[in-house]
Image (cartoon, rainbow, N blue to C red):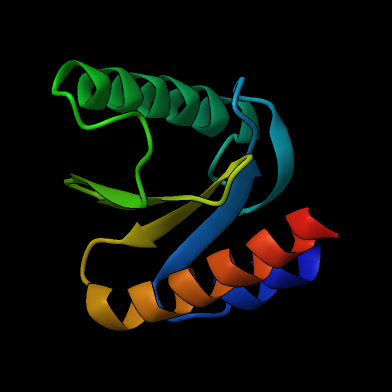
Length: 116
């Protein structure tokens, strides 16, 4: 799992990545020194929970594939890898389409890890 995150972090514009469990517990993190694992995990857990609740209220179930939070300093990409989520923090001025290919590939490899 650590190898997958480290490879993902080598992509242009990626500041860090982590795997967070359903309750917001950090499973594995490879974040830059400027990012606090626990703060990022807590924010992600809250956002994932709110997203699932909103989807449910809209009658769309509670599962999601991926969502992207866009902020003035960058993006946070959250990918559902059941039973956890992959979070990737990126710079704001990257080609997100190219980076999403790398993120989706990492997510698929993580899903295989969960099956072992």
